[in-house]
Image (cartoon, rainbow, N blue to C red):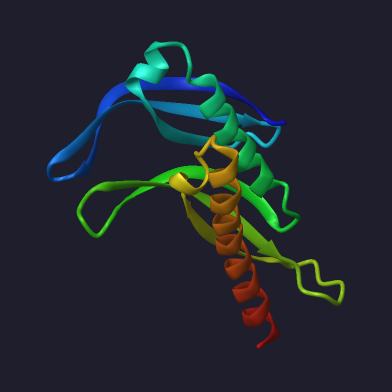
Length: 150
């Protein structure tokens, strides 16, 4: 099981659609042992009730699961603007491919994994979403392999 350190928290409103908002505490954590710094929104009532631990632990565990893949060498939380003009949280995992033949050179690319695929604490849902996250990583890795083979 991975661990985490809570680095920061900020109360905010998460806009889900033009008519739907969610009161959240935006939590920034550092996972252990990899040291990935990433953020995730937690329901304000859950955070204020002192019950955010299981959700943050599940998030850290899932990040560390991805970091445990041999070809993932780094990760950091990031945000972008989605097609609706809303903030979208992701983790940018750095995927590495080292070509065969003893070359000392490696090639890398970023795999953007939506935070929603890693922030579920329900085991039944979590395994399905984690598989989707791993598929994103695998696709980026396969693209690196194909690009390197010419």
